[in-house]
Image (cartoon, rainbow, N blue to C red; front, side):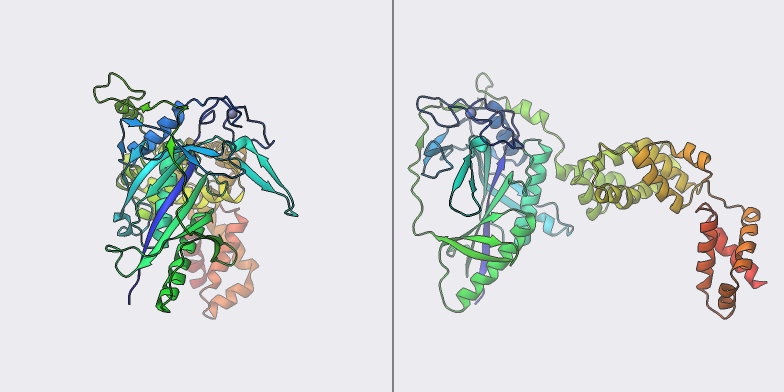
Length: 495
Ligand SMILES: [Zn+2]
């Protein structure tokens, strides 16, 4: 008996607006002092009235347009009634049957496997709601404090159709969506900080097209790794249950990241009754009208403002710079890296060497410069090297005016203190020495100083020559051309 897993996602993202969803309190998620950004509206005092944040609505419309959703001409807010201490009003203002966006799809694009990138994931809807307050439980678990700074922060919810089949597909979807939200600049979408939160629905059945199996929900997934691992674990767990002839229980499960298992949190006996009804304190939202005479938004204008989407960027840089998919994926996920690279490329004027220079710049940028930035945890804004001096460094290397060792040292120096490579190599005497007559003297000295290595070489240990080259490199502070050195040592020792 073969069981097929079917997976759907519900993803919440906190939107980057100046103020909250229905009041003018600051939407500042970095605020550390509890209950600072609060007012009678977001605390739900009697007699207060909400007003709609236009920027938040626009943010969701942008997401919908980027994902090819249908934007509804009219949309409305509804009350979702439930009682919980983090919900001051006793209901959440959300959207029920007329969300801002219906349908749409996101084609997976972040896999290094081109076949996996073909898969199109259908989206069911995208709507707008408000976030809840944050509960802080004391360590002894005897008391709970409430911080209302987050209450009323605009929250986008995206629901996919149940069309995914593996943990990896779900992870690629979530990563792709994060990049879309960041590209549109509508959410930081940082999972570790809880700015993007993912819930998974998963069921197994023999024939999902005819009948879906019992649905289990997984919550508390705060990394992409957790999404993939939790789903793969859950598929195996449900398979085991079904193969033993037992039934999967409809429930909500949590993810234990340390043990890498899901665990039962609470049973879902029946669908919760939220008693949705239209929010009476807010007007029906007229989003746009087809003849553009009325409506709060001009969709054509919004489309014009749309930045280059990551999958378009991916194709462009593959084509323009000859990147393979792995390389393109590194660059589209790091906007600052790509900007730095593209400015570096602009500094390469000579058409003849351009391709070689681009290739070398790409390798040095990904392995050395990005490596340095990550290792020292400095930001791109803090580094003192400009794309122009980086380009100069690459050209010096390409023209063999400096050795790769000098290039790596210089890179660190300029990142920290700034400066122009052309000037620095003159000041510090770092130009590569390739002249045989100049290097011959050094080769002779090294041979004289290392009789043991010479004896080894003459006994047939060819590798001894590498040691000698290393000695000569050290003596010349890395400025000697190692290829020329090796040739000279060979010649000297033959005689
Ligand atoms: Zn407020």
